Each structure stands twice: as structure tokens, then as C-alpha cells.
Image 1 (cartoon, one colour):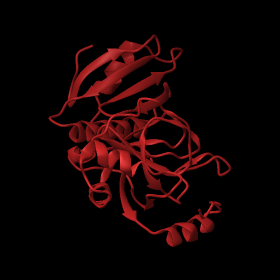
Image 2 (cartoon, one colour; image 1 turned 135 degrees about the horizontal axis):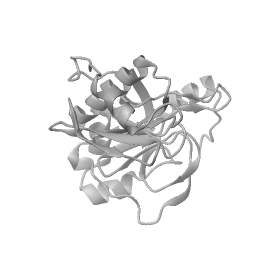
Image 3 (spheres, rainbow, N blue to C red; image 1 turned 45 degrees about the vertical axis):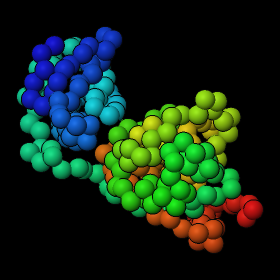
Length: 238
């Protein structure tokens, strides 16, 4: 399929889907195009639209084969008018508190060894950037945030943990994230966030969506425990 507008490529994905790839000079620029595309497609309320799955620089569109085919979907999409302000990030902003160095989630020594940075420098670098949620996946509410300062780049762990606590703030490569629930994981841990990112008992509410922005603020143990209690979370004070 021939790309159009701000798209670099369009690929067929099985008999009921297409993947749209954004054009652009940088990943943030491409992601803004994808979010604008998702917004424009959603606003049309096509009867044949089943699901949109956005990622870093692409979005997968799934359609109902009884109501459309690849050609009709392509024709519909080629008529879309994207928001002229595609250079401006959309979405909500979330400021998340972090108890850096919390005993339950503390790989600061390993990160310092790998990067050559002090623990204080690691915390300052991580908390001085506004991150963009490029995609949500892996687990409900797990948002892939980027991009880290290059000085903080660390690879994934050679041997993933079998259990990472809910609320663990982590980094891997040029990405950072908050584990919304307890799960296995191979990212290096910086600390804990007391704000729930996923509430299965509240209509499966997810705090962060693709296209949102996130910043982190350092807090101490006392503040962490107070905020955790306000949100109904119980933590061992050790």
C-alpha cells in the first residue's frame, strides 16, 4: 500500500488489520503523528473499526472483515485530515512521586557501577526529564516512557527477576517505566511510586495512556508511606 500524508509506510497485518508507520526526523516527532492519527481515526467512529493499538512510531488498526476490507480501509484513511498541530504533544501530564532507593526496589549500586554516576546524579538525571508515554503493554497499565538521558542508559538484566513489586520505578536502555502490578521483570530498579497505575477493581482503570507525559519527583520514606496509605497501599516500613 502506498503511504500518504505523514506516513512512511502502510503494511497489511493479517486479513483484518493494517499497520501505519509515521514519518518524521525523530521518535518524539513520529509518536506525535501516531497519537494525532489515533485521535483522528477514533473521532470518525467508523463502524468497521475494531481496535487501534498505538506504539512508538506505528499504530495497528484492526477492522471488521464483514464490513470492510484492506482497500476500503485504505481509501477511508487517505481522506483523513490530521490536526495541524501535530508538532505539539497531546495527552495528560502525570507528576509521580518516587522514593528513590527504597529497599524493596533498589538497584542504584549496580546502575552507578555501570554508568559511572553517583546515586545522587542518577536520581537527578532521572527526575529532571519530562517523559512521553510511547506505548502501553506488557502488563495492564505498563507504560513505556522515553527517552532517558543517554548517560543513564543501562541494558536489561541478564537474568530477570521472578518478582518485581507493584510501583517499582525502573530503567532499561533509553526507557523508564513504573510496574503497575507485581510481576516478573528484567529492568533495573530505582525506587517505588505510591500512586496506583492500574486499578482492576475500578473498572480496570489505567492511569497513563499512550501520548501522555510523565515526570518524577523525589520523596522521602515518610512521604511515601503517607501517600501509600492514602491510596490504600500497605508497605513494610523496613
